[in-house]
Amino acid sequence: MQDFLRPQLDDAALRQMSALALAHIGDGVYELMTRGRLVTCGLHTAHGLHSSTVRLVRAAAQYEAAQQILPLLTEEEQTAFRHGRNARPKTIPKSSTHAEYAYATGLETLFGWLFLKGEYDRLNALYAVIADAQTA
Image 1 (spheres, rainbow, N blue to C red):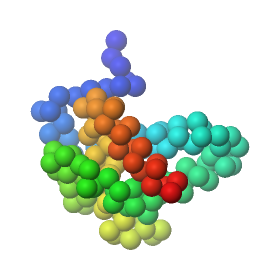
Image 2: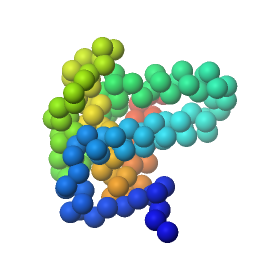
Image 3: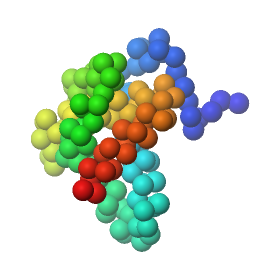
Image 4: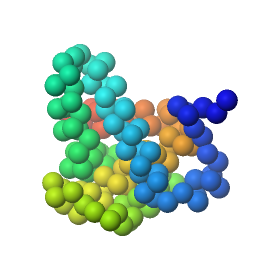
Protein backbone atom coordinates (compact mmCIF):
# COMPACT_ATOMS: atom_id res chain seq x y z
CA MET A 1 0.00 0.00 0.00
CA GLN A 2 1.28 3.46 -0.87
CA ASP A 3 1.88 5.84 2.06
CA PHE A 4 0.11 9.08 1.21
CA LEU A 5 0.79 10.58 4.64
CA ARG A 6 4.57 10.27 4.26
CA PRO A 7 5.29 10.12 0.53
CA GLN A 8 8.95 10.03 -0.41
CA LEU A 9 10.58 10.78 -3.73
CA ASP A 10 14.13 10.20 -4.84
CA ASP A 11 16.39 13.05 -5.94
CA ALA A 12 15.70 12.44 -9.64
CA ALA A 13 11.95 12.73 -9.13
CA LEU A 14 12.35 15.83 -6.97
CA ARG A 15 14.49 17.52 -9.65
CA GLN A 16 11.68 16.99 -12.16
CA MET A 17 9.07 18.70 -9.97
CA SER A 18 8.32 22.36 -10.53
CA ALA A 19 8.90 24.83 -7.74
CA LEU A 20 5.19 25.55 -7.60
CA ALA A 21 4.38 21.84 -7.22
CA LEU A 22 6.83 21.66 -4.31
CA ALA A 23 5.32 24.85 -2.87
CA HIS A 24 1.85 23.30 -3.17
CA ILE A 25 2.75 20.39 -0.87
CA GLY A 26 4.97 22.61 1.28
CA ASP A 27 2.08 24.99 1.93
CA GLY A 28 0.11 22.09 3.38
CA VAL A 29 3.07 20.84 5.42
CA TYR A 30 3.75 24.30 6.87
CA GLU A 31 0.09 24.84 7.72
CA LEU A 32 -0.21 21.38 9.31
CA MET A 33 2.88 22.04 11.43
CA THR A 34 1.44 25.40 12.48
CA ARG A 35 -1.93 23.86 13.34
CA GLY A 36 -0.19 21.11 15.31
CA ARG A 37 1.82 23.68 17.23
CA LEU A 38 -1.25 25.75 18.08
CA VAL A 39 -3.32 22.77 19.22
CA THR A 40 -0.54 21.40 21.41
CA CYS A 41 0.22 24.81 22.92
CA GLY A 42 -3.19 25.07 24.53
CA LEU A 43 -5.18 27.12 22.05
CA HIS A 44 -8.50 25.28 21.96
CA THR A 45 -11.34 27.40 20.61
CA ALA A 46 -12.11 26.92 16.94
CA HIS A 47 -12.12 30.67 16.33
CA GLY A 48 -8.82 31.17 18.14
CA LEU A 49 -7.19 28.31 16.26
CA HIS A 50 -8.39 29.58 12.91
CA SER A 51 -7.41 33.21 13.55
CA SER A 52 -3.95 32.27 14.79
CA THR A 53 -3.38 29.86 11.92
CA VAL A 54 -4.33 32.45 9.32
CA ARG A 55 -2.07 35.04 10.97
CA LEU A 56 0.91 32.66 11.05
CA VAL A 57 0.64 31.17 7.55
CA ARG A 58 -0.03 34.33 5.53
CA ALA A 59 2.71 35.50 3.17
CA ALA A 60 3.98 38.28 5.45
CA ALA A 61 4.48 35.84 8.35
CA GLN A 62 6.15 33.30 6.07
CA TYR A 63 8.46 36.06 4.79
CA GLU A 64 9.54 36.70 8.40
CA ALA A 65 9.89 32.95 9.00
CA ALA A 66 12.14 32.62 5.97
CA GLN A 67 14.37 35.41 7.29
CA GLN A 68 14.83 33.44 10.53
CA ILE A 69 15.99 30.22 8.88
CA LEU A 70 17.90 31.41 5.80
CA PRO A 71 21.26 31.65 7.64
CA LEU A 72 20.81 28.05 8.84
CA LEU A 73 20.19 26.41 5.47
CA THR A 74 22.62 24.05 3.80
CA GLU A 75 23.72 24.79 0.25
CA GLU A 76 21.25 22.22 -1.09
CA GLU A 77 18.41 23.71 0.99
CA GLN A 78 19.31 27.21 -0.22
CA THR A 79 19.01 25.96 -3.79
CA ALA A 80 15.53 24.56 -3.11
CA PHE A 81 14.52 27.84 -1.43
CA ARG A 82 15.83 29.96 -4.34
CA HIS A 83 14.05 27.69 -6.82
CA GLY A 84 10.76 28.57 -5.11
CA ARG A 85 11.56 32.21 -4.48
CA ASN A 86 12.30 32.71 -8.17
CA ALA A 87 9.15 30.91 -9.37
CA ARG A 88 6.63 33.03 -11.20
CA PRO A 89 3.12 32.36 -9.89
CA LYS A 90 0.26 33.66 -12.00
CA THR A 91 -1.23 35.75 -9.20
CA ILE A 92 -0.07 37.46 -6.02
CA PRO A 93 -2.60 38.24 -3.28
CA LYS A 94 -3.33 41.91 -2.72
CA SER A 95 -2.60 41.42 0.98
CA SER A 96 1.12 40.83 0.35
CA THR A 97 3.98 42.45 -1.48
CA HIS A 98 5.81 40.75 -4.32
CA ALA A 99 8.85 40.20 -2.07
CA GLU A 100 6.75 38.69 0.74
CA TYR A 101 5.02 36.33 -1.66
CA ALA A 102 8.28 35.32 -3.32
CA TYR A 103 9.89 34.47 0.01
CA ALA A 104 6.74 32.69 1.20
CA THR A 105 6.82 30.58 -1.97
CA GLY A 106 10.49 29.87 -1.35
CA LEU A 107 9.74 28.75 2.20
CA GLU A 108 6.87 26.54 1.03
CA THR A 109 9.05 25.05 -1.70
CA LEU A 110 11.77 24.25 0.83
CA PHE A 111 9.26 22.63 3.19
CA GLY A 112 7.74 20.63 0.34
CA TRP A 113 11.17 19.51 -0.84
CA LEU A 114 12.25 18.42 2.66
CA PHE A 115 8.92 16.66 3.23
CA LEU A 116 9.12 14.68 0.00
CA LYS A 117 12.73 13.75 0.79
CA GLY A 118 11.53 12.35 4.12
CA GLU A 119 13.64 14.85 6.10
CA TYR A 120 11.16 15.14 8.97
CA ASP A 121 13.76 15.86 11.65
CA ARG A 122 15.15 18.74 9.58
CA LEU A 123 11.63 20.10 9.03
CA ASN A 124 11.02 20.04 12.77
CA ALA A 125 14.37 21.69 13.50
CA LEU A 126 13.70 24.54 11.06
CA TYR A 127 10.11 24.96 12.22
CA ALA A 128 11.30 25.09 15.86
CA VAL A 129 13.48 28.11 14.98
CA ILE A 130 10.49 29.78 13.34
CA ALA A 131 8.20 29.00 16.29
CA ASP A 132 10.75 30.36 18.77
CA ALA A 133 11.06 33.59 16.80
CA GLN A 134 7.27 33.98 16.58
CA THR A 135 6.83 33.62 20.33
CA ALA A 136 9.72 35.92 21.24
